Image 1 (cartoon, rainbow, N blue to C red):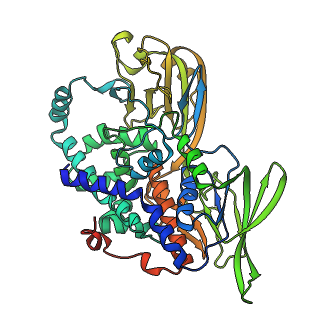
Image 2: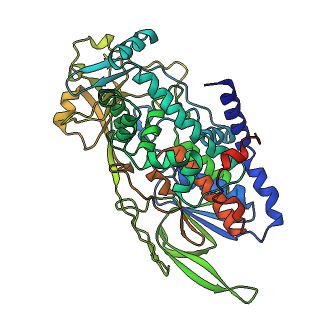
Image 3: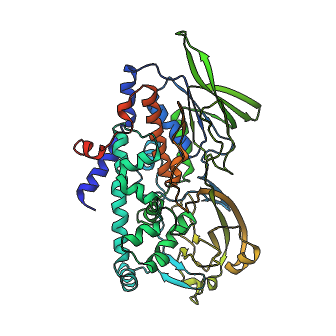
Length: 509
C-alpha cells in the first residue's frame, strides 16, 4: 500500500467527519424540511440511518425509531460469569471509515487487542497451524500453494481500493437509487460481475488453484458467513478482507455504537413492533393533497399508528425476519422479497476443550491456537471454534491457556447436541446458544437485489445485504438512503445516480 493511498484514505476519513456540516449549511436554501421521519429497526443500519437523517434534515424534524427487541439488533452480547462476550458481529476492518467515524464521534475506545493464532481443521486433523514466526508461516504457505496467498492479498486489495470510492462519493453528497448503481459507481462492471458470479468462479478465472480455495479460502468464508466458496464474489471479497490484519472491535461491545448513534440522533425510541405501513392522502395548506405514510405498530400499551413524511425500513423484509404488510401501494410492495437468510448457531461454552477432537496429540498446556477454522468437508459439524475474550479487557487480563477452563465460541449450521459437546469438551459449566438468521444465503448469487426505493418516500436499507452483509455495509446503506431521501425531497436530481464520479472527483481531494 502506497503512501499516496494512505494519505487519500486519511483525507477521506477526515472528510467524513465534516459530512453533516455540508448538508445542514445548504438546507435553509431549499424547500421546507419534512416534519416527521420513521425508522423501522434499531440495529446498526437503523441507528446509523437515524444519525445520518439528523445530519441531512436538521434539528427541526422529529425522528421516531421502532424496535420491538433490544437496541443493537444482530450486535449482541451475553454475560458468562463476571464478563460479557460478543455473540453477534465481532470484528471491524481498519478501513471501515464509517465505523471509525462513529466511535470517534461517540468518544468510544477500541477494545484492547489480545494476540491470537489460527489453525485450520478438516474434520479429522489440523491441516495448518499458525506459527509465532512470520517467515515460518510464509514458507509453509509458499511451499504448498505457491504464490496464491500473496496474490489473494493483492486481489483483495484491488477490490478494497475500488470499494473506498464510496466514501468520497458520500463525502460530496452523492447517492444512488439502487444497490446495483451503488456497486457500479464503486467498481464499474467488474463489481457487478463479481456480485453475479460465485467467489469460486471469480478466483479460478483469475488463476487461483482449486486446492487453495478448498484449503484456505473456504475456511474464511465459513467462519464469516457460514457458507462455502460458492457465495457471490463480492461478499466473498468482503469475507476475505475480514481475514486481514488490524481488525478491531468496540470496547464494551459493538452494540454500544447503536445506542450512541441513537442518542446523538435525538430520535425517540418506540419499543414496538411495526405491523403494517399504508399510504394516506391528506389535504395540505396550499389546497392540494399530500401523501403520508401511516405506520401501524403494537407496543406495551397496545396498537397505535402515526403519520410520517418519510419512512426508512431497516429490518430485513424476508421470511423469518419480519412480517410487515403494505397496503394502498401501486405497484404492490411484498411483505417478503425472494431469498432466505442463512442460519448460524452461536454456542458459547465455558469449559475445558478436548484438543484430541482436533486430531492433535499436543499437550493442552502447549496448544496456543485461539481460532480454529474448518474446511468445507462432508459431514462437518462446525464452521469454527474460537477462544474468545470479554468485550472489555481489564488491565491485568491474560487469556487463559487451553489447559484451563475458558470461554469458547462455536459457530455451527445446526444446534450442537449433547454428544457433539461431549466430543469437543472434557467438561463445561455453562452453555449459551443463540440462533441467528445472521446474513443472506448467498448461493446461488442473486441476479437482482431488493430495491432501495419501495415507494416515493418509503425506503429499504437492508437490500444492500444481498450484495454483502456487514456492519460497514449497513452504515454505507444508511448514509446513502439519508442522502437519497434528502435529495429526492428537495428535488436535487443532480446528486443522484451520477456516472463516472471517480474520474470527476479525482482531483478534488
